[in-house]
Length: 271
Length: 243
Image 1 (cartoon, one colour):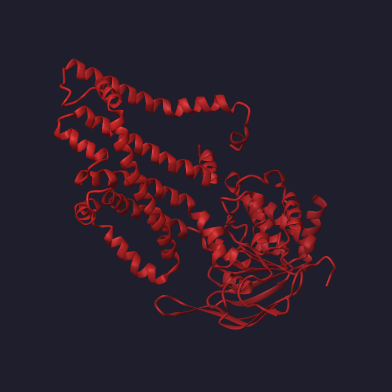
Image 2 (cartoon, rainbow over the protein chains, first blue to last red):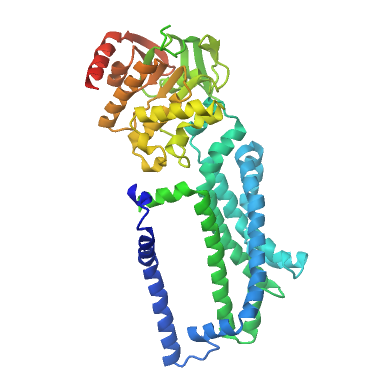
């Protein structure tokens, strides 16, 4: 168990092998699906505007790479800004909720009840208020990713055992020290769980925002290609959007691995 | 006081604790208690669940205030936490994100004690409980008994005049528990801290303590104090000849 963490020499080969073992089946399934898809399109002569084959979609991605890149950058910007707002506002609010009785009793239930509003339904209103630019999409991404981030941060900061708090208090720790040394590090795994969910949500929010009204972005590109019956471009946009989502998600996961090294240790132990 | 002893004297005078429940009822967790613990003495407290043993410990540590009465530690009245006590709970509550060594150093950091001298002390303590090679491991890599040993080292590193232990070995298996009892005995014979040791196990109490305080339930009162000095010395000698 403990040996796995300390072996140093055969790490490279071991890593490659474990990567194949871990990722092999998933890649295999994807490959099989694409092969079946390609064959199906070819055998049944499905027209491209109904279902383009993978090769047609790849062709499209290559031929319209600039279009996809420019619009992808806009959507990425909306996602990152919306997500960033959620973190910048959500984490301090979570700290407030943990420390302030009034906030916990009044503001927090209010926030939870607001959560019942479907954020997507707010998008047309936001467009009306904030115009056609990037701002309403950022707001939708923010609103939709905000909640999981706050909730997981609150849960995480409350998860410190009372004995743990007593222990540092018995050493004379004040509230700030207790927060920095106990509550915050204890909450990190939970906070990162919320950030991962929130990042996924932010992608949805930005795209939906673009569906309502936009002049650029991948969602906008999809609307345009839908009208033009350019199904291949529609699929190309979906591919780029999912790649973008995976990239941003992995970015959060990467920061998590840096910030919470002990958690990985624990999961390695379980494996 | 003996030269090796770093323990402090404790006095409780008609100490009681009444909790208010959420519905507004008063619950007497602890009736009027008088208890004196000599410097360097090892006192075990046994009693049924809910007899206020843990409350008593929390009062002595200053983590909760007494409703009536006065508590003195080392002749000084207890006011709030942050005093001389090192605490060990039933759960080891090690910080998962710190290495074993860094866990032991936690009180040194929080109390802003001198780092250099305590680095050595922490290392010595870990070695004395057989965990020298585990300094850089994370708690998740340790067994339950090892984790509780680390928790004890963490309590001891700050040279506490008083060691408060709330059923520290209750969650461990019987064999580990026995070993832990021996380890604790050895450490106490060396340092002579004042120890208040709460336990469910009468055997454990008798094995370890100079005196066993028996408590009754709701409100908690002291029913009996048994002097077990002779038996402890007998056991201790047995232990010493073993090692």
